[in-house]
Length: 259
Image (cartoon, rainbow, N blue to C red; front, side, top):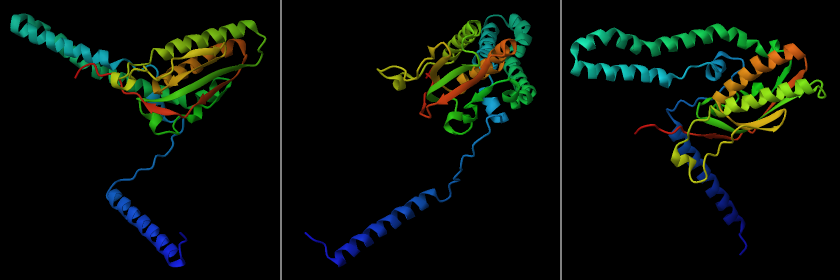
């Protein structure tokens, strides 16, 4: 069946009318909403440093301490009021400790941030790919993971066996530290196939890869800034560290410990 000119024009008009209708519906849905556009952050910004800070204490343990003290205090109040009164000062101290630890951590971040701003210029070799941090809003969420980050160390003299062995051992220990940051995923999310995150392992003596989130990036920062820079100061044999992100991001929700 061949369409005549009027039928063709009618088809175009119907399509255009439907496009306008859909655009009007979308505009109505978005009306009143604050449409926020993500502005990429500099990798050396304070917000990035705060999120990847590798020396952050395990606040869950510090929160459990006052809870334990409170429960103990309640039990002692029922059993022995005099003993409760003697324990009261210790209970107050235990309750205040998480706040004190948190404030100390914030203070450490403020004091150490000026050094972080210039760390790439200070270590003595090039780090390619670190500026990837801050480009993705999702990756700045603590539960988002990049499916595969590759870390490669490039030496100036690849025939230096001592430098090769030292860098390889340091990289291996980094993979161990990175894997310790993997929290348990929700069972419903892990499913029968298991955790989709890739554990860190070395592909070659100077190349390792695995899934990465902000906690892993904190370990990587410590590895490059402290360990590798220390090796380089001694041997002057590290040319560069190359970071390659997959840009395949997904969210892994931690397992809930209680309902």
